[in-house]
Image (tube, rainbow, N blue to C red; front, side, top):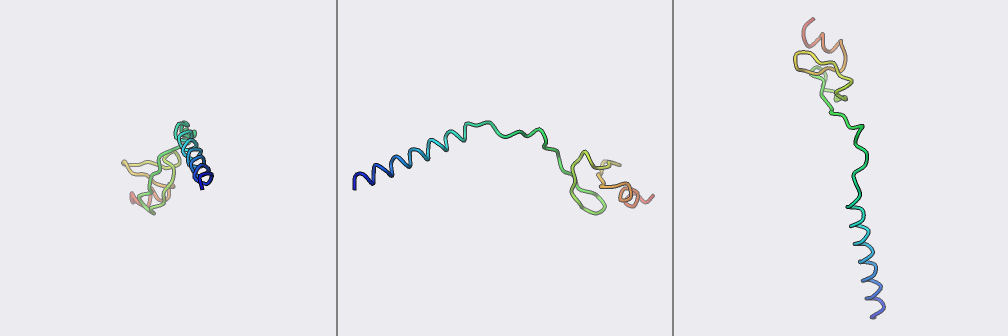
Length: 71
């Protein structure tokens, strides 16, 4: 019985050490993270860098921009 308790204690200790080690790691590379915006016309979400901005609104393409603005 004492061997079983010793085995469980060692297993818990190893588990806790692994968790502590993983918490100390720096976060993965987040350089590729970009804000997402929503097209004012159709509602699709796309990266801000790929959107078209007009009158403080974002659009997924020129056609939706023109349709929304009535051009």
